[in-house]
Image (cartoon, rainbow, N blue to C red; front, side, top):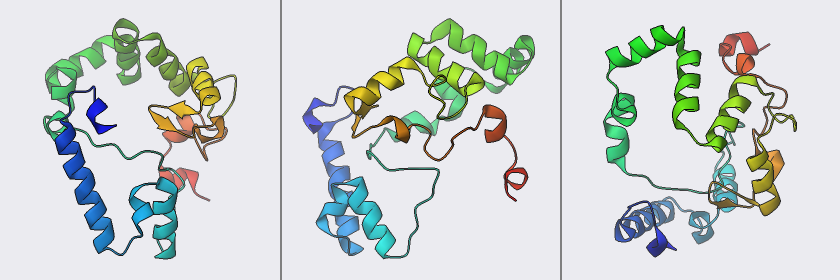
Length: 173
């Protein structure tokens, strides 16, 4: 599977990182299956008193190029801070600037994901993008396996963008 990497990553480097991860887990006393399965890793961590954070769920562990992140957001989007601030001003706000960029440069899937983010209600079937529903019927999402629709926005039922952007103190009783 590593030899099939189509994103330019070196399969030998990936194998080396996977080996390092397995060795680190072994040194920490994890059973061998903890490096093969997200569920096994979570079970082992729970046995050590580490609780699952409700916001995240492990499906697939993927490695990326650190060089892609090292330059910061400006490097990734090809704009410096002044250009970014100008685009936000020109569009009338950050959300409007992002919407403009997405509609100008992104795929239909990205556009429907964006609509879900800014207009949708988490876990409401009528808000969930069609391609996500299709992925759920196939059981695969972003290359991972075992995906079912209930995994999409897990534990965020009924939340809108406004709810996600409220300060934590405002959300906690």
